[in-house]
Length: 87
Image 1 (cartoon, rainbow, N blue to C red):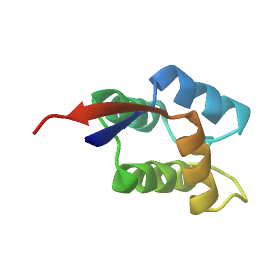
Image 2: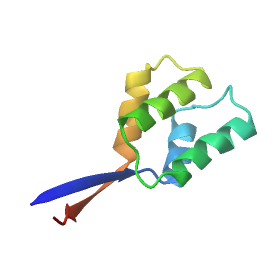
Image 3: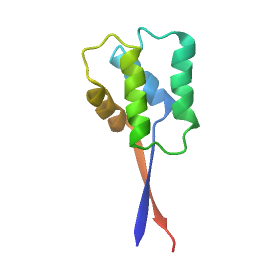
């Protein structure tokens, strides 16, 4: 049997993370809405998506946190679902 992992982030969880960590202080409302829209539009997030999000947050934030550290925080707020792959 094989399983496939699907990872998602709920926009409300991302919004809370940004508030708690004081992220996105250099971004405007359109950039912030684009960030949330990107997460909302994805059925499943892959590693490249997490890095894209971490870089986006880093670029629009005044933080000493590194991109990998932000990526780790994003993974921690994500949810995984495992689905059986039928042959």
